[in-house]
Length: 240
Image 1 (cartoon, rainbow, N blue to C red):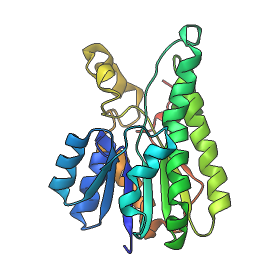
Image 2 (tube, rainbow, N blue to C red; image 1 turned 30 degrees about the horizontal axis):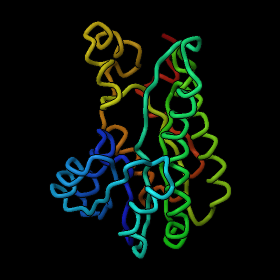
Image 3 (cartoon, rainbow, N blue to C red; image 1 turned 90 degrees about the vertical axis):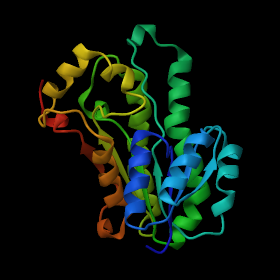
Image 4 (cartoon, helix red, strand yellow; image 1 turned 90 degrees about the horizontal axis):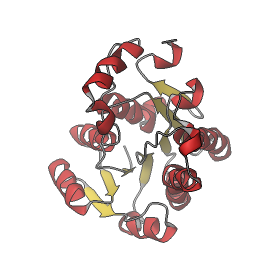
């Protein structure tokens, strides 16, 4: 690797798993998140640099968080920031859609805008995250599916526009152990049923997503771009 990997949302379960995996191979990352205490601990444990971004939806905040790496070689960017809003469409509010879109999509756009030049100079790779719900359609998912559908559109559009200098791919998981999913998985009855709805009969682990993202960020995947890859335990093809 000739450059650093930028991981936004590094203190989430997937971002942290990705950090640990890169660190194990001696690959340098720059970690970005909101919680400085968690970031500092993760960075120290894995010998990585970090910076705080208080609001990914604010361009100035994103710009400030990247100041320390603006002269570095950057070879990859993973946007591991996300949210889960589960409501019936009737009970959703206008702000639910706007806020979720801004966190999941606008934030990613801000980072890509700032990193595009550095990534192009190093034949870099971008990994974004969607959800299997965009392609399958689930009750109570209109808010998050709208935002993640935009992420999938962004992926294919930028892959075409940025080629051949930058690759852009997207991972679409099913429910995975995470800070966001914890309230759902803490419900014993629901947690018991979820594995049965997946071909692999288990809930996803952060490492499942992290290792897939790692592959897409490294040169071994240099002929893969514009793809939405389902890392979902077979949920996309299962009818239950």
